[in-house]
Image 1 (cartoon, helix red, strand yellow):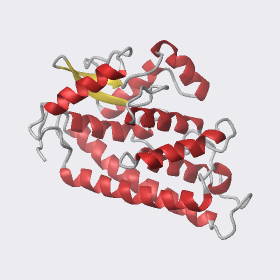
Image 2 (tube, rainbow, N blue to C red):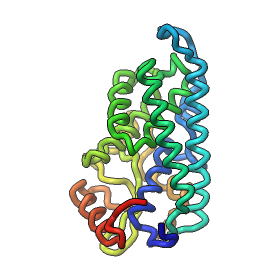
Image 3 (cartoon, rainbow, N blue to C red):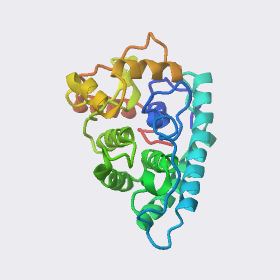
Length: 267
């Protein structure tokens, strides 16, 4: 893999998007599993337990997997901040992919066993950890879609962090070629030869802040500014137009990939 490429290269944009995935509240430091900062801590309970399921062990395992997820992303983010415009080292990217795939496989088995790990079953930290792992499972769209469907009935009940649902919904929609709803997914994009940074296409951009407020997210401008600071995106990098259509966005990404020497194949 080449070590130096333009910062708006699709591969770096994909990596940046993956690193930003856990930033529902746009923290000042690398993302942490949802629930730790946005929901009260809670412990596993045996209420409505499935016979034979060890909820305490499952909770501990989910948190440990999320810790591994965040550790490798923390190293990657530190590298990206120290080497702006560079393609990240292959060894870190490979390690991240291996962790993501192993974590996703285990979460899939856990969901098969107990359904979605809600707060009352495993505690908010572990429930948020399960979401974080699925959010990063971009190699397994069916798992992401399944998790989204399992989380949806729990919206507004306190059993999940509703902001987690919003982030996963937006990511799944982009994965299947549709615009996002809450504007949680960000990237770098080369538009007419100029690097831009901002949210990927949104449905009804004029109403996005109302939708964000309704689910507990900050205004989009505030969110983007915090992310710029957290990930070292300079203020003079223009914002991706918020009214960009998904068709225009996909065409730009396809053009960027076509210009790559390897024909757009990710390493």
